[in-house]
Amino acid sequence: MKKMACVLILTVMTAGVLAGCGQKKEGGTVSTDGSTSMEKVIGALGEAFEQDNEGVTFTYNPTGSGTGIQAVSEDRCDIGLSSRSLKDEEKAQGLTETVLAYDGIAVIVNPENPVSDLSLETIAGIYKGEITNWKDAGGENGEIVLIGREAGSGTRDGFESITKTEDACKYRQELTSTGDVITTVAGNPNAIGYASLASVAENVKAVSVNGVAPSEETVKDGSYVVQRPFVLVTKDDKKLSETARKFFDYVTSSDAADTISGAGVVPVK
Amino acid sequence: MKNKKIFENVVHGVFLILGLITVGCVLLITVYLFAAGIPAIREIGLFPFLFGKTWESTSADPSYGILPFILTSIYGTAGAMILGVPIGFLTAVYLSKLAPKRVKAAVGAAVSLLAGIPSVVYGLVGMLVLVPGIRKLFHLADGASLLAAIIVLAVMVLPSIIKVSITALDAVPEEYEYASLALGATPIETYFKVSVPAAKSGIAAAVVLGIGRAIGEAMAVMMVSGNVANMPGLFESVRFLTTAVASEMSYSSGLQRQALFSIALVLFLFIMLINGVLNLLLKGKKEA
Image (tube, rainbow over all chains, first blue to last red; front, top):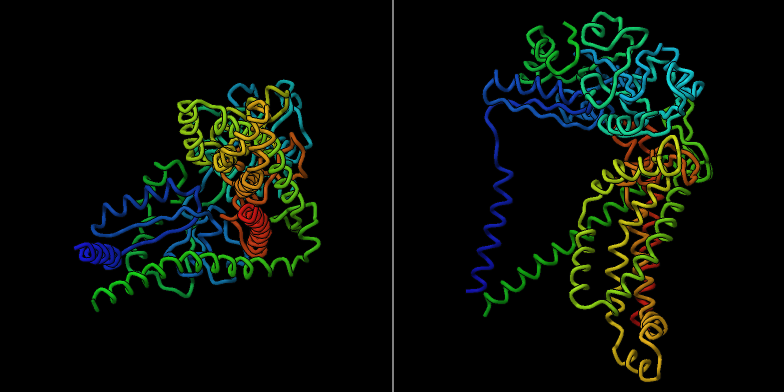
């Protein structure tokens, strides 16, 4: 009896494992992979696309811009997502970029901080370590604490290239997610950081840059200068599957504009 | 009869395969780490890689020196041991020898719970309570520092140190202690001069296990240490070997990514060294 039970359990377990492999969904799939900053916008687009096309499965793998670009070049996904423009070496690998939307990068300070406007030069000066006290930037006496993102992050790349502070930032903390940056700035009255405009919460204050407050309108008309593109990455020599093509056409059409702006970023069309 | 034998063999085979999965994983990881880690070291050069003082992996003229990470990992682990070992060791002596049964059960359960708390929770509490606390206490501009990481690590290594030490102390034969007491030694003298020396290899193993836990921790440390590639200082923002890999991996490319694998390889060698020492200590215990 005992051994029968054993055999039975083994069989059931094996069957269970095998059953997992056999499942196949009806309809096509679209897989995307890349930038964590694009989670909100691509999630909303995927949901809308799934609703309009029954039986279609949309997947998004939040790995980071670099990983997403690599994934599409290795055929591990249909569309790569990057929150920075492609580098020349990446374009040379046969990849094409299509701008989906623009994201404003907000410069954030603690709500206790009286500073509410900074010029782009002052921000650059602060991040390069030339201005180290808030009293030199229009605030109260206190050492400025620079909070940034880790090397290779799309937000950091975007921020540093816009403010022309590449490789010159004297960070006090390099954090690995937008949420960590916001939490840290919210917890330190002398901190300054940067984060996606869409993810700025109420516990931090987004300062205006050159007198222009960050908002969808000011990013769209270009008057708010700290902004970067959200890019769809595809492979030149590989034709997208029918479903992926349909998704690509949908998100780049004006039909998707409402969904995109609903996610807090600014659509191209 | 025949059926029974076949069945025995089948089950034997299944267990063998399951056992080999572990060995296979270790082999795969070892081979992969060496294969992935060596190219970057070759390109950068072993000496500039291990002893270079600047890490600027994404700058226009990148430099890949990991000495700050190595020293931070060593200092951070040493600091955690300086704080954690006395607390853990004395707790173990108390729980094993002095504590009433109920206290032992209650504290034991608390220690097990401490071991089960996910490291991200340690990190979160550290980030929200410890870091601002250090900032206010020492009047710093920012509290994310080596000190914060040391404190978090010290708490995290306590369960390993306490549990393994208790096991070692419990295993000391009662006769040793009775003999000492009969000779007129007080209980405290007995515990520290008879029980502890008898359990010393087990306690040493506990410490080494704690070191392994501390040096391999990434998540909690990443949230409280600031993650800037500075040379270590108690109130500096620092980056550990583990966090160097974890923080840059998601967006890395090219030589930067390969260098991250090389850092992982260095970390792996550290862990192997620690495991080697642990095995040596445990072997010594059996022979003694």
